Amino acid sequence: MANDNIRQYRKPLNINIGIICFLVIMVYIIICSFMYFTSKHIVGYEVKAGSLSITNVYEGIAIRDESIVTSEHSGYVNYYAREGEKVSSGGIVCSVDETGQLQDLMNKEATDGIAMLNESDISEIKNEIVDFSTAFDNKNFQSAYDFKYAIEGSVMKFMNSNLLSNMETLNSENAAGLINLCYSPESGIVVYSVDGFEEYSPADVEKAWFKKEDYDKKQLINNELVSSGDVLYKLTDNEEWSIIIPIERERAEQLLEEEYVKVRFLKNRNESWGRVEIIESKEGDTYVQLHFNNSMITFATDRFIDVELITDVESGLKVPNSSIVTKQFFLIPKDYVIKSGNNNSDSVLRETYAEDGSKSTEPIPVTIYSENETEYYINDDELRIGDRILMPDSMQDYTISKVAELTGVYNINKGYADFKQIQILNQNDEYSIIKSNTDYGLITYDYIVLDADSVETDEFIYD
Image: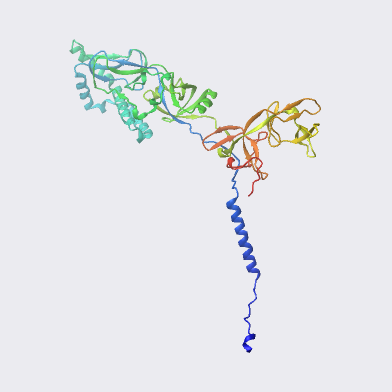
């Protein structure tokens, strides 16, 4: 019976300081995790001075005063004037050989053609080869053929004097004079290719012009058989020319404001000033025409020309476009805003009515976000459309009705979303350059909300 008094010993709960700390930390982590996943995450952005990277490189189409010269005879054409160089009025450009005798003569001369070239001639050809190899682009292999014809033209120029003297002999032997010399009808730059753009004017511009895959350039080849009326060459006799580039309307208007813009030609890195003109195509697209009065001879053989527009780079405060927001404000005449309260803050006197119909006024604190010559932009937190406010020391009143929009960002320096007006100087797809140190605006190193859609005006920002 003694065993009936035996009881199991219960071990006392031993809670030490380590367990308590562990539990406290675990509860804290759980609470923080819950708050993190359930709270709004607002990312800040530090405003710094900067500038925008704007694409200023365009591929344009050259428009010149070009006249086509056709053949009056049938036969084999041989060119003597070098392509891309100026010929005088009445100068010999080519000949049309009705018999083919001239080609036999040229083949004979070509046997020891190198001997006909002096050191100066060879040096000039070498320079052409170096210039071509430096600027050659694999994506534009057509330029290799253009270079070939240019070299042929250079060699023909050097052989010109000997050929002309031999042609006189050939024609004297043949009374019919079957080798016909072709003289330039006027002075100008001679080009041995046609592409159909010779007949176009800037008013004809359309999207199809800029499809290089559809571009068809016909090269006029030496010793090719031509018929009467076929194209021999073309002349450009005017140093006035232009380049047309496709461009966004907003960018075009910016360039038009400058009137003249500095242009760098990527082919040779030379620079020139172009007068800006905006063209609206029949399709409704916007183009800029850049007018030049020099450098035409350098690009006489080129239709597509790559240019870089060198414009003044706008600098200021750089902010992301995602931070920019548009907000509405009341417009209130300046005479109705007063200083009141212990802190001398901005207020307006709003007219109120008691239950018994008696009329009185109460000061309503307001925040000024911007101003023009006669009005303040006031927040609409306490005021409503239709509220009447009184002018101090006067019987005049004003009914709130005018609203206007301001563009700005939310400044979070003070721990809440404070709207600040901005003046955008320039903009690309990601960033805007805004004017610094403006009234009611931002300064360097201010913190703003990265995503303006994530907050409301005066919302508190929790880190």
